[in-house]
Image (tube, rainbow, N blue to C red; front, side, top):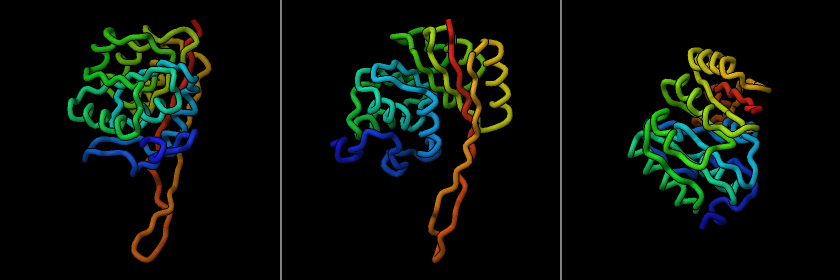
Length: 200
């Protein structure tokens, strides 16, 4: 039962509770909390998650938005199956998984989103431009960058698209880990999170 796995109304499911595949990225819990906070979800939010990976954001958002719809876009068939397993594991019924390559598959998605999360994908500029076309007025977009090239590309795209109320943060998280007989703090890889709004 999902209630037994995560009986809380707050996000932040531990990473180890998700099924995983080797080499497939997972948004770490602390970064996920930041992403979700910048999405500013509502109970009836329609969220498109582009490059959904392991499916952590769709699961968390699906639980937080019981009257909403989450569309998880993933180009790899095996990874899409992984997202399905995680949604089934947490009994999240309001996630639709689309096996497709952004931006080409976006024209077939419905309904249009009022929130978009972009956790990956190339070419990022083309994806942002296409997503912006479908994002509803007053909608929010959140994108992550793990390297300088992606940070620059997203920043430039935000400027070209005239994204408003832009915020940029970089996560700096350390976790206590046991290594041998000692406990030490280990850094979680830093990620830039860029967010903003479409005013009209």
